[in-house]
Amino acid sequence: MSPDSSNTSKIAAYAHPERLVTTDWLAQQIDTGQVGVAGGIALLESDEDVLLYATGHIPRAQKIDWHLDLNDQVSRDYVDGERFAEVMGARGIGRDTTIVVYGDKSNWWAAYALWVFTLFGHEDVRLVDGGRAKWIEEGRELTKEVPTATPTDYPVIERDDAPIRAFKDDVLAHLGMPLVDVRSPGEFTGELLHMPDYPQEGALRGGHIPGAKSVPWARAANEDGTFKSREELEGIYRTEQGLAPGDDIVAYCRIGERSSHTWFVLTQLLGYSSVRNYDGSWTEWGNTVRVPIER
Amino acid sequence: MTVVSGAALPAALAEIADDFASASNPMKLDLLLEFSEELPPLPDRYAGQLDKLERVDECQSPLFLTVEVEEGERLEARTVHLFFDAPPEAPTTRGFAGILHEGLDGLSAAQVLAVPDDAPMRFGLAEAVSPLRIRGMVAMLGRIKRQVRMKTAAAA
Image (cartoon, rainbow over all chains, first blue to last red; front, side, top):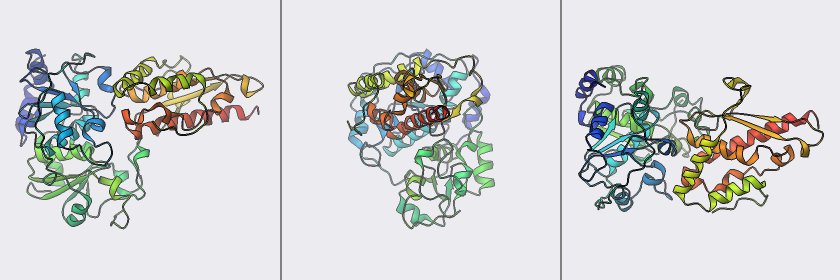
């Protein structure tokens, strides 16, 4: 397969082109033995469906489970520095390892993993444009072989939430400033108390946080799950929605996974400097007593 | 492990529950994957005709199911057959369907109706696949029992 030069120039136009790789680039790295070896690139698959990895994955990819590896199992929070060090160390990842993440559903869960890695300040994390679906669509190799990593000592890093994570009180203090609701239009208006097809993850009240702009996450993605070009994205977020790169912005959805996708678009592809993901999102806001809601 | 209620599972389903209960988390996922791979395809009379099946909206990926109940006088003598359809890119949903197929297909209508509604909670799967996903299987079981009830009501 010839290198897709148009795709490469598409990536070069983004604010942080080093955050996104093509399936071609990844295939080359795998072919030349750069992936999953000591000192090489760590490739991680992060899916919504926890069984998907086992049905076949990109060669040399290891699984990261958003539920078991990244979420605390008791408190509604992310794992702490010690657990994170275990998760990374077991996969042979060091603090300076290049991590490449891909996943199902247009990279929702891959973007979510990348965002959590960013809470721990892991420097070099990239997404595969188009994710799992594009790799398969292109007829590339899948394997069921699970690679074994040589464990490393990943340092115990204290999570730094403040720059990119918003809590409910932060959002209350933020009212009147830019908010982006990335859920489906029906959830935004309050007609739906849950995401279509996800009725069990609902809330007692429908609607949105007052002042939020409705920009469904999927508007940032093409049919094949790749991100739209910088020009197209600027047309949506900047021209149409009036969000400026220096604005203080909070994005939210239902549990923070779809808004991780939008967080990635705003900060990494468009270079917005101050965007926080409110991971409590509608499952917290729509169940909280006496917070303001708009319909 | 949380034991939820007292009512017994039918033998085949109880055996599956034991297999899961004694497995570690990674083994549970392997086992679930086996069930997803073993889910039989739709027979010709349903293939490509999802409108003849009931859609289970509670599952995170599209799942369709239908139930056939053999003719007979008594619920104890009427055999139930289950048919499911879910895409290969939704292996967890397929796995849940596979468990119910393996555990319930071929039982009598009376036996299916006696399956406790909390049966899906007895596989120890919540910690392996996240508790929210299990509700998809609860919904499948609910639809199966409702279809059995409907399809046997006329004769009762």
